Length: 410
Image 1 (cartoon, rainbow, N blue to C red):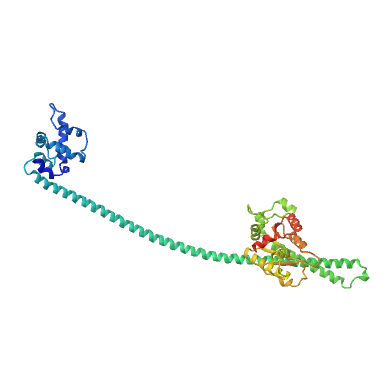
Image 2 (image 1 turned 30 degrees about the horizontal axis):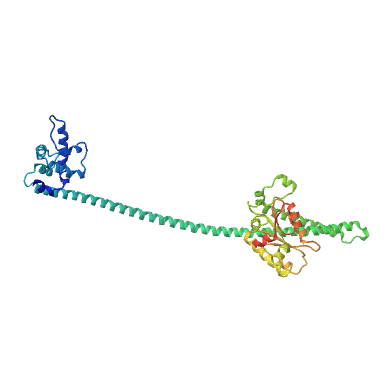
C-alpha cells in the first residue's frame, strides 16, 4: 500500500535517501557484528555516484526490506538526507502528499534556476552579437577609408603616369630631332669634305701647270679652299659633339673592351635567350634598342609591296618606317639607289633619314660606308637580304635582320 502511494514520487527525488542507504550499508560491513542490509545493495557499495538508471532498483530493494528502511529512517541526518528522503524513509501516513508538494517546489526552483541561466546565456549572446556588429561596422568604416585613400593614390599615380608619358614623348621627340641634326651635320660635313677635295684637286692641278697657263684667280681659289676646310672642320666638330652626346648612354651600357676599341670593332646587340636572329622578335628587340638601323630600301620595298609601281613601293615603305620610328623611337636611315630618280627630294621625312646613292654608286656601297661612319661605340643594325652586304657588315660588328623579319613588325 505504501509503495503504491509513493509511486507518484519520481526516483530522482529520493537520490539523497538512496545514497545514504548505500553509505550506511558500506559502514555497517565494518562493524562487528555487521549491519544487515539487502544483498542487492552490494554492487553499488564501491561506486562513487549512483547512476540514474539504478535509482528505481535501489528504491524497490529498500522498500522491500522494512527493517533496514526503519533503521535508515532512525539514523538519517538532515545534512545527508533531504526532507523528501526522510518522509520516504519514515513512511508515515500521508507522506506522499507532503513529498509531492516538496518535489513540486524543488522542481520549480530548478526550473527557475534553469530559466535564469538561460536568460543569462541569452543576454551574453546578445551582448556578444552587439559587440560583433559594432566591430564589423568599425571595420567597414575603416575599410571604406582605406579604399578611398587607395583610390586617391591610384588617381595620383595615373596622373603622374600621364605626365611621365608626356615627358617621355617629348624626350623621344627631342632625341629624334637631335639625331636628325646629327645626320644633317654629317651630310654637311661630307659635302664640305667633298667640296674641299674638289677645290684641293683643282689647286693642285693649277700649281702643276706653267705659270703662264695658271688661271688669274688662283689666289682667290686658295682662299676659298681655306673657308671650305674651316666649314668642314666646324661641321665635323658639331657632328662629333652631337654623336658623343647621343652615344654616351649607349657606350656606358655596352662598355666595349680596350682590345675591341683598339681594333675598331663594334659590339653587336645581344638578343634575349631563345630569340632567333632572323625572327620578327629579334627585329622588334633591335628596333627598340638604341642602335642605328640602316635599311636596304628597295630590297625591303620590293619584297613587301611587289605589285605596286616603284614610286608607290618607296612611299609605302617610308610611311611604315616613320610609324616604326614613332612607336619604338628607332633611329632609321633608309638607302635607295639613284639620287636622280623622280620624287627623290619629295621623299624627305621628319622622323627618318632618307639617302639616295650618288650617280655611279650603288646603294650597297652607301650602306657599307654608312656602317663605317657610325662610331664603333654604337651598335648598328642592317636590314637586307643581300648576301654580300650581310657578309661585309657582319665583319664590321653589325647586327643583320632579314627584310621579311622587318616587314613582319611594320
